[in-house]
Image 1 (cartoon, rainbow, N blue to C red):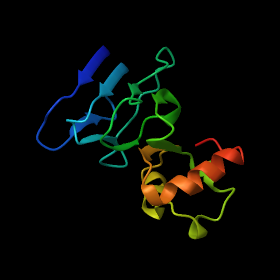
Image 2 (cartoon, helix red, strand yellow):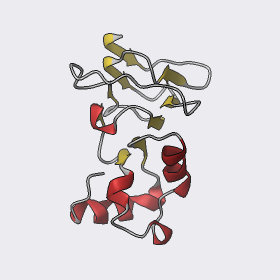
Image 3 (cartoon, one colour):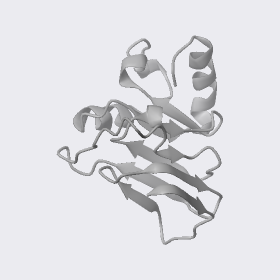
Length: 139
């Protein structure tokens, strides 16, 4: 898919993409779509590196639940008040046990050998995320 806009798509439960799909500048906006999922289902699912593609997803105007891992978070445009990018290497700099971040995300990324993920900011995380960004963490 190249240069595709999904605007206020009302679908059963979620809008789901395969990790191996060729996604080039796919934008998802609106409130009608409840969830966007793009993740590995099995550890052997393969993401094919495509250096010529700068952006896989633009979710900066998407209001639903987001769960993206298996494709580089660096190739996802997010809204800093709605989503955060989870890079395990960055989070090694802090004590996750004392933060509001879900340890499940970290485990899922490790289990599926993913370098990063994109997730929703939940209300209880907002303060922690702002502090981490002020400290210079790339999230």
